[in-house]
Length: 115
Length: 111
Image (cartoon, rainbow over all chains, first blue to last red; front, side, top):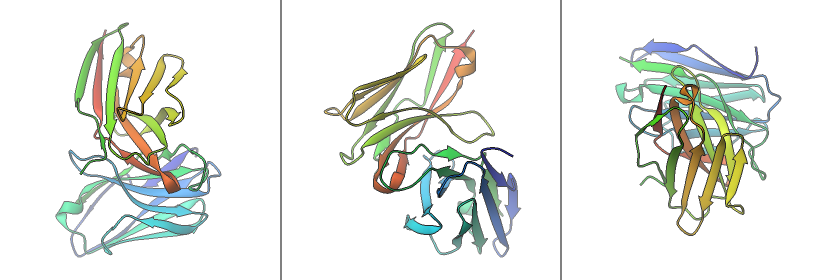
């Protein structure tokens, strides 16, 4: 595998379910990000991890719980979601998340539908 | 309030002609600007960037212009090719490599 991969690509879950989204980067990067893209809205940053430490939580509800066990893997744990949480969830990585300008490389996203 | 705006949701251009995509921002703390391209069912792909200390950056058929006083940047694609048909996102960077994205412009290049 190359680049940034995300699984699953599509997920349908009920409001009482618990599920997890997985992201893996094969680029040797140290920073990873979660973004959300709702219908007719811009991509919105959710979380930033730099060297496995969370450095940004963009006022995300606690029903979204990120986990970064190492620099190559990022998870987004979901529980008791609402229908309005249905969106495309994108993972990205970059060389670093401090100082210099580092381009972010995106995965293909997980299309989440909450019923 | 959106800090990065792409006011044209779509653009149609003839193959071989120039495509000009525009982006406006409000936050003067942004120090780096990027353009991403997105095809359906794929994640955004980095295209070109520009630092706030420059006013132009060119890479092949793609040129980005930055007007700091107007808080405006644009992406020129010349000549446009059918494979350029995609959604283009403008993004602005703040400290911590946090990107704020515009809403995107869908470009259709007609053969």
